[in-house]
Length: 89
Image: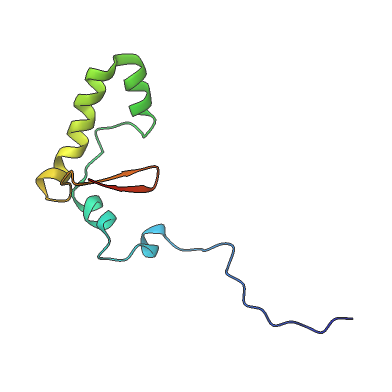
């Protein structure tokens, strides 16, 4: 019989609100404070809008979503994140 090994293991499940895992000074908390998506039925709406109404209407809706971030100074257009890859321009 092998002796008992004391090993630390990360919890597989965390029972807490996701917001408690994001630091108060994180940019996502600032975005959440200014972004109102109550007018949008659900996240899959954007895919359906793009497919059904075309790119021009999608562009208008996308700009409406991004505008509060620009107005609040959270979006500057100098850094772009694509698929979790940081690209500096």
